[in-house]
Image (cartoon, rainbow, N blue to C red; front, side, top):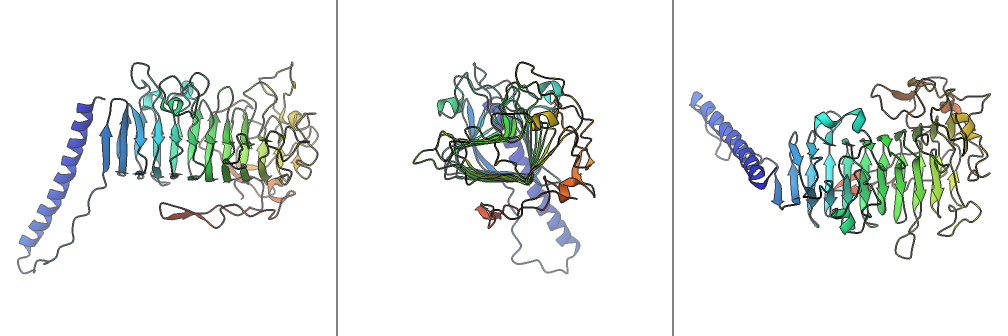
Length: 473
């Protein structure tokens, strides 16, 4: 859309708002005429102003701050930038439709670049949507990577993603991409995650949201304090990628999430990049349900949880369902050094590994030759270590643990399936072993149990729940 059309559209919208306000005044005046005996209010209440956004257009980007009002539909045919020191609040029901044509003659994938603060405040009844045009929301495009995702820069102070759907991201980073120019990603080598963070001093809350159909990671945290709770991740990663990928400079609580069919892991927890200025990665990951992880890629690197390079990680009371491998801790024998294994104060235990009886349609005989989830759980993997999952419930060929979900057949969904069915229900039926297994009780306090304040609102991490997975009965 060219500048003249955008300006015309905004002018029409402002005129419509003014007309509505004038209509309200006329209606009120008519009511007064119908009742001549009524005394007029000497100090009438002012008409509330319609929330508006301040927009500055350039050839390749639109710089926006203020408010996108509830129900608005926005078309992005260039990069969206929230300027440093400014905020953009997106209200319930807003639809942000991203052009797949890209920007400029090089067709650079459209990015949402947050230099200030972004508050996506949807609701259960009216979630916010970041997507492509409706005709391109197809199964064939699920992992094509049609746009660039949301990138929070090193100056992004706060970001809230609440009741928001983000989908069809993961385009390739190319020359001219803002993230390549800024040094966040490498042109020709990287693909955009759905959400990226960079500021080690930033505060980020991603909750009650859906991150699906992305070529790369769901969330890539390269810095900041984060609460990641009650989200659904589905079909994250085409030839690699995780639902949540953590690097140095991050302190995070990750709890209550459903992670369906990540290409590699539900959780990759690494302190890669740790330095004197970028602190050790510290993550509490608890009460998550990870399903079908690891089957859509070769190699033996992933399968549900991967903890490396001195990350301090508490990974407990999670429910792994039909994943390719158990939790891995490479370089386990060299802990507490930046390039070694994980911090030996970590707890990666008291999890439940459920398995169906179905065979994967993708098997790599030249590697592990693992074809069933229970095989992968009991495979002699070099990154399985004795202190990890020592008390966990682990399926074997003779004891296939079934968590008894309300509506999900662990024997009926293909291990390589990545299409998410909204009708599935991952609550547990009475008698589920996920309700009564060897659970961890209060091994730690979530980092943000006392709340983290963003935009004047306090968001708190949930307490550790007394069941495996994201949902109890």
